[in-house]
Amino acid sequence: MKRSNFAQWAVLSFLLSSASLLAAEPTTTIIYLKDNAVSLTAPAGWLLDDERGRPRIQAMFYPAAAEGGEVEADAVIYINTLSRAIEPNLDALIADDVAHEREQSPKLQVRRGEPIRLSDGTSARVNHLSGDKWGNFESIAYIDTPADYVAIVLTCKTEAAHKKAQAPFAELVKSYRVLGPDAGLVK
Image (cartoon, rainbow, N blue to C red; front, side, top):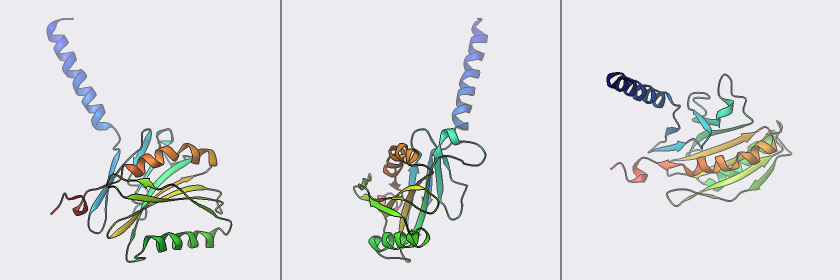
């Protein structure tokens, strides 16, 4: 290969590799709360979709194999925010959430899970649910912030998918980062 052809090939290779990096799917989303913002990063092998489900759902994550068209993954994680004005106490919010779910699905089983430690030293409360009227298996991590609550919900069609998605669910919850005044970034 001639020197000038090699240089052209090297530049072309660099540009193509850079373009593929720029075209890669985003993996982190920012969710704006009343007084600050938080970020969440997709677990390894999962994709972020922060458009579908808006405005009710803040973001969705699903396994990369489920990409394209309608999401038909056996496991989906979605993010909701809830105003503290609705319920000023996290315990009461969780109790209300469970009571509402039981109204819809009287055979609902709720098991308290191990809390998931967050980077700021606090923990997310976790409940595991099964037996809803649709046959889903869910895990919900509740995060208490000064102005809002963040609910990270793993919902699965099968118990096997639910067990398989527990590690990505925990990874996503652990990725939670406060970006606003509570993080000391904004004065």
